[in-house]
Length: 217
Length: 141
Image 1 (spheres, rainbow over the protein chains, first blue to last red):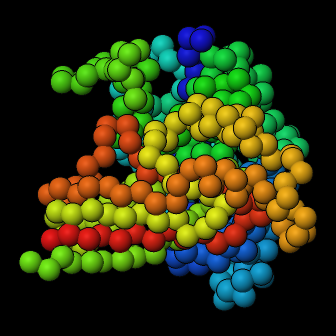
Image 2 (cartoon, rainbow over the protein chains, first blue to last red):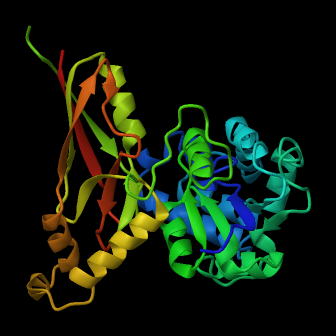
């Protein structure tokens, strides 16, 4: 197993809410799991098109509003989405503790205008280099998975097997592992910190018993 | 003392095809909402094309499980279930039968007595995404 050279954090789902979660909150006024399955799958499909740059943010909002007969205007929905974005401070605190020689990249799956309006450099600047951000919308990929994995490697110069992906989307994290990257499924800040400790990227807390090869699991 | 029984249905955000959903926090929140401090929580998956698993929500483990099931119960196989031509998810039914759709977890002092790396995972192996539900039922005092 190669030594990890770079960590790639998805913005949506890890550092901030995912776009489907934001849409569920602003348009459907409901947690994503409570949204009708057809609307949920459609939102996910449109989100993929949006983050690949196949549709604009305006077209994304327009389609959702039209299909769900919601009284919001495009501008109102975009504003509501941007206002709902909150960076996860507890996650940033964990990332800030990582050794400085580990490169950290943000995979930004938000449209650039949403990212700049909702986040900009606020909060992320302390734990990420400002130029270590990859906008999926600029990736020119036809498909997100698996193409994004090779893109991460080629865009940053890190071999695939030295890349660690931190992703809240389980199927994508599993696909990453199958493609030759390492991946951590993001659940919450506590679990993320434990994962970094197990990978020996962070020191063992007092009283933490690391499982040896015979005791793991 | 008569034991108290609380029941709730959880909706899952899943798209099938061996999707794994971690419901640990939802179950924990349910248990705490009941106010029951000692007893057992039953978790029941209401479908025939998936299963429940107590395991670690880790990408490599899930990839290994997928690879294992693909060797033992491959997706592409002439299952007799397909003769009916209603759906073509024979692999999902067989895999489900090899696993389990219920787990019981002890609750003490209002806490799920899960081990450090144990999480409550749902495997949804349905081929076409469909609404998926889990029933959680707390029994105790």
